[in-house]
Length: 390
Image (tube, rainbow, N blue to C red):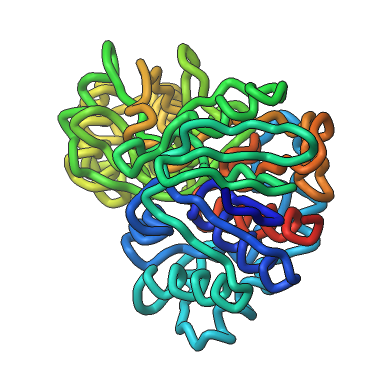
């Protein structure tokens, strides 16, 4: 049996960062990773360029049963802190949109940086480790894999959630948490495309069409692009609202969020001979404009259409409701909503209240960020919080 101060289960973003920080604080740390190499989800993120943080990340950008839980960790390790590390390694970066920071080169640079940080702390990173059992006796955790047994005073759960199972994702973190008596908030797919059926089937014929919109679900609203697919709706605006959406509920899309109230009747005054479909084509892709015009059944010149009809059409375009019949599930979800309950953890240290020495960080915890680098920032911040306490 090999003995350590800390064993970290999971060699992803949170696990590697926590390991490096703890190792550099003088702890003897071992990372056990199931995959053949560490950081596999990092490598595919951001189209291979890793959207490694968001410069505006704050508590308001996260979903959790306790919306205050993330405040402490996020305040103590900020996007600027991580950016300082990136720059110290000479990794070139750029801001894309809405505060999203990407590598100019490859996501491999972020993985290499995290592994270099681990090397500085003499961390042992062991890949291809299938965990068979985890036990806790006399103040120590013992982890059994096919290669043997590993023992430590502290155990960090950093194995993520079940999103993208083809990358090896599973419910392991939740099963382990339950084994030690911790509650789990029911997980569901997040940042995931939504599927359409019934009266919305017409829109599936627009597969490949994209447009800037404002998508909303209850109080959550996002002004970004929406993409029609052969199964339903995707694109950044849809992925964002999907994290809030519950099955059986509608979402709404404002197809023309930039236009002022009364734009349709005003255009009738200035260009009465223009058709409704032609006007929509000025603002939207032609296929989408024609489909909406057909749905609204407004034919002929604007000058011949009553103001009441135009006002109704404008209201419908500003709040077009869709009734998704599902999502594309964990297979296509970028992250997971839900996870190990924050009620079980210290917001200061990420340590389990019921079992000293047990920690949970990253996506395994019931804290889920928006699309755009927020989930990476939670990985860094929660890992930092745990590492300071180990």
